[in-house]
Length: 64
Image (cartoon, rainbow, N blue to C red; front, side, top):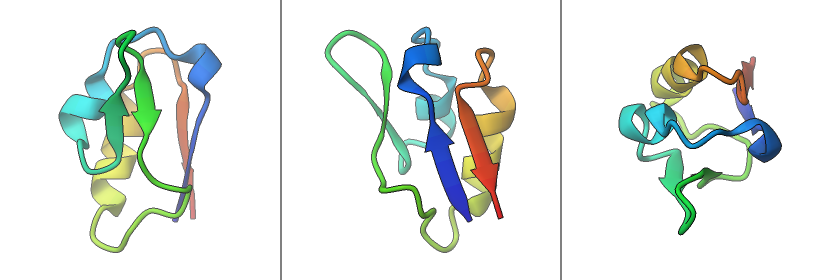
């Protein structure tokens, strides 16, 4: 599974960070940062999908 994050669409709600801190962090300005290089580690697929489903700006997408 692959996760993509559109930083320019992020508005800093940080739901992704709250739901999947293994995959996301927050920068100094309060915007999300993807902590991995696109490939979701085994066992975190559900959290990746949960983060994507809960992003109000649709800045996160998952494939595979």
